[in-house]
Image 1 (tube, one colour):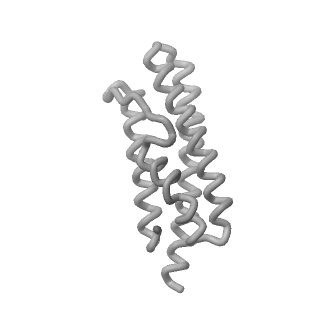
Image 2 (image 1 turned 180 degrees about the vertical axis):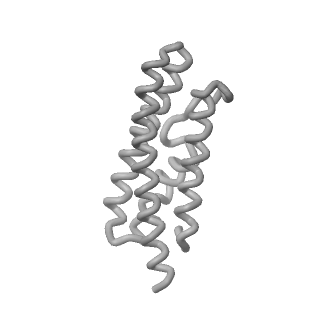
Length: 125
């Protein structure tokens, strides 16, 4: 269970590390294949303790979970599509999927930072 605000920063870091692997592959400096949304570190937490952790730290924890889950699933859809398009040589398709992937990533970061702020308030109380 999340016991301090650093917990959600760690989940954010898990996401950024995954994003870096995808981005490096799209730049041609890595050969990451991507994963299902349930297989990355963030997804494993999300589908294991995520709902309870978010509910414990925020009054709108269930809503935060639902939003994060939806954005996370779509992030994986677009990141996997970007990787597939890249492997097939479709630069335009890869770029379009990558753009959506980055938009969703930014939204996920905002949600995780919101959880972090709530956790910080809960710890201070």
